[in-house]
Length: 104
Image 1 (cartoon, one colour):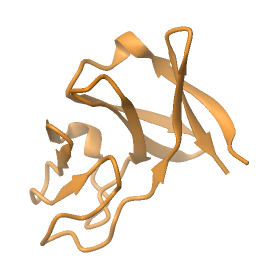
Image 2 (image 1 turned 135 degrees about the horizontal axis):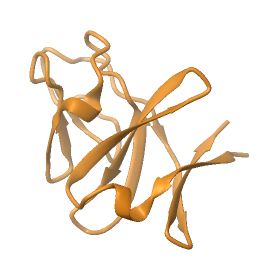
Image 3 (image 1 turned 180 degrees about the horizontal axis):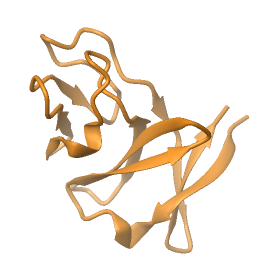
Image 4 (image 1 turned 90 degrees about the vertical axis):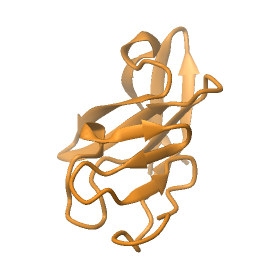
C-alpha cells in the first residue's frame, strides 16, 4: 500500500513541463502531461544520474539534458541509447489542487 506524500501544487507544474521534488534523500520528477494528467518518476537519469527536471519535455517523453537519452515518463520506459535502464514510476493522485505521489 502506497504512503502518499504531498509533492506540489497543481499550478507549480505547467502543462507539458516537469519539476524536481526532493523527499527523504531521494529526487523525483513530477510531470504534467498534455492531457492534464500528472506522473512521477525517479528524478535522475538512469544513464549518468543527471536531474531530469533540467531536461526537455516533448509530449509524453523526457529528454535528459546531458546525453539526450529519452524516457516515456508515463511508463518509465527507456526509448533507446544511451539509456537502456527504465525509470521507476510512482502512482500519483490530485486532491484539492495538490499533487501527491505514492511511495512504498
